Image (cartoon, rainbow over all chains, first blue to last red; front, top):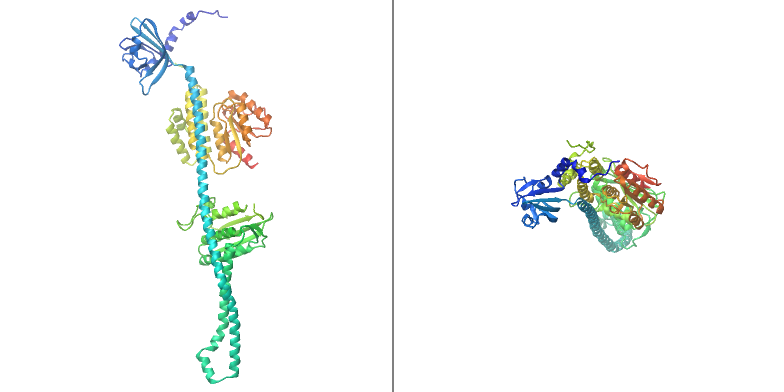
Length: 416
Length: 220
């Protein structure tokens, strides 16, 4: 075992190496100065903290606290200062060193060191604080984003409520109009029936009178008033009027079915009637775009639903299909019972189909491919809300571009 | 002549990003991140192809004595701020109704890996609760008790804390026998799962494996 040696004996062997370390050190700042501030020696560390000064350029003003003038005016020889020394230009460079200052034969040796353990502790503390700030910032971003999403949802809900309110008002208006027309229609139909009976009676009476008195003046009068034609035309007029009134009655019934204004919101119904009424109401749009409607309806089991809301969905899908077809095509409206209960309905058109890049967005609120001003972009999102959220069902779109689109609605037997 | 540290092989395609990171040039790192996202890569790919390799390389440079701990801290701080910058893209509106608690291994102060794991879960609609770096076994257990998560994730960046990770796993398993636990991070990358003795712990080597794991959990 090596005998323990005196420390200075050991270090004496490494004088040159230690001098090199001392000269190159960045953690140690060593300088020897004359009274006027001219540096007689600066190691690398001191040169750097004095702003990269060359030894012959006085940079003693970089000694900020205590300033160089204070140090050189301290009394005594040997160690004249032991404490923190702040160095720098006050802007870019500020360093605090643990320093000692010696005075000897009119020169001042200033030796400072950075407190490495303290710096490490501060670095760790800074890292920890930075992590905390980062985590808090992240929490803030998360909350902001959630708030922004909530705001979007509220805006959407508001728009949909406004839309629903409009539809509701329209439904009320339609129900009101239907009701108002229904009353005069009832007596028109009733009166027409009486009128038909009366005309038949008058016709028969006239024919009897003709048979009793077949005179020439009577024949002249018959020709003058074109009575033969009028009597013949009565039947056709009455038949055409009947048809017209039947059509009016059907329209009124369809309007009432569509609006269901006077019915409870929830009802268990066979949706066949609703589908047919809605197609009938959409007839002008379908005819204008030369859309042929084909039916593929099986017998549907009754489902618990809000029929007025579902009519609104059917109307949206039918009008969308008609607009997609644009000019000549087929809309197939189908329906069948589901094995698990409830019904599956579909609306298949022969339009151009939905491009794959937008099919994922068609149920988004305000998404529309229609020209500005002609679509709200709410029809499908309202439909989605009604089918999925209010009825616990599914609404899906499938399309092969160029081969049309199919919207499928699945409804459970009972409302959730 | 002074001894030079051996050259460290470079793993990163994005040398420009690494150079900016080592120079402490945060604006350039921000610009390169924006450029990468504008080129069409998603956030997970950004993590995998830019941040993760850069961080691993920074770790190697530190191990090879080529950079100081201070530089490593600076680079880490820059990437943490970048994670926050892209964070709004991470938060998915779609919610899966599932929750993960993520922590670093007890005593482990490197948190970027753990935060990336949180982000990938959040991108899949999960809620992620992060305990903060350097939490103790008791603190992490406290969060798990309070949150009752569907899964716990633990990240080990430096091998020093392997024993603490094992203690944490043992403590979780004792109290929550069936709770899925996943572990990952650079600290396990070299040694894998061999030293981990706890049953039902999944080791995920990278973010791809993590994504597959999330799909399994979410569909299961």
